[in-house]
Image (cartoon, rainbow, N blue to C red; front, side):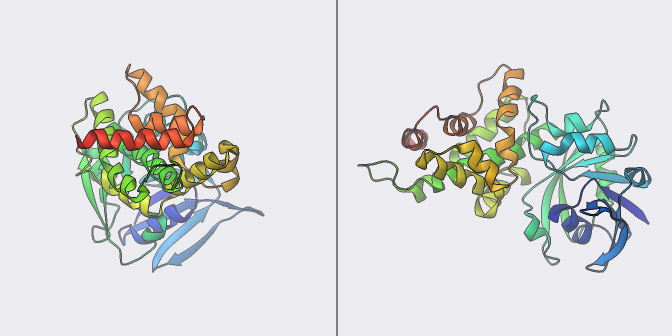
Length: 324
């Protein structure tokens, strides 16, 4: 029996543990409850899931999923055992301009693979659903990790381009925030007929251009239209993802002239895109490049560098210029 560990519980980790793994792969989730350590074994969807409170138990696993959001990466790094492959599901940029995998490597560039694609936790809990996601990393590590998963539940888009895969996921989240902001701004352009639905539909062209731009920055040849972590993930996130909801909160706060950061904090919604804003700008500085348009646009709304009506008008003008 093979075993895959998870650094934290949660709907995403539990869905992978219950529905994505091979029949001969056991899940071990590191967790605690409010009364202290929790150690138990349960069965969900006929698959064994073990829970432990001891990080040392992760040393016996064949791979460990870094299951927290990027903001909690320091906690994951502290408990990851040396010599065990790491699977990163994080889709955020760290404040210092490093990707999650760069930090999870802990000095070993061949120790982490990235799992990325259109996979909302609530959908993953559906035992009948089939997913196509990217698995990015070295050939040997991809092969080692892939054998732990059920090929009837998840198919992999294999690629050695780990950083490009991460950047697509990060830009997807920032773009979904922009989508949410626009969705909350119907009627902000006084005296001008603005079809917000049209802007939302056309926004994908800006998203595609931004994804291509940041990939060119690192010399990546990935195609956002083909890669599962690109436009496919963007569309799913804009339908029902957390980043879109945070975007709506930002747009609503901007319209009401209330504190945007406080509004996001009070929502208690984890948003990888929102967390990534400063780090993504730092990343672009590493390469001596100006950040992609939507990153600058979302930052301008959040920091109130532009009034919300001016921001929407600017985006509308950008989209119109791309049609010419």
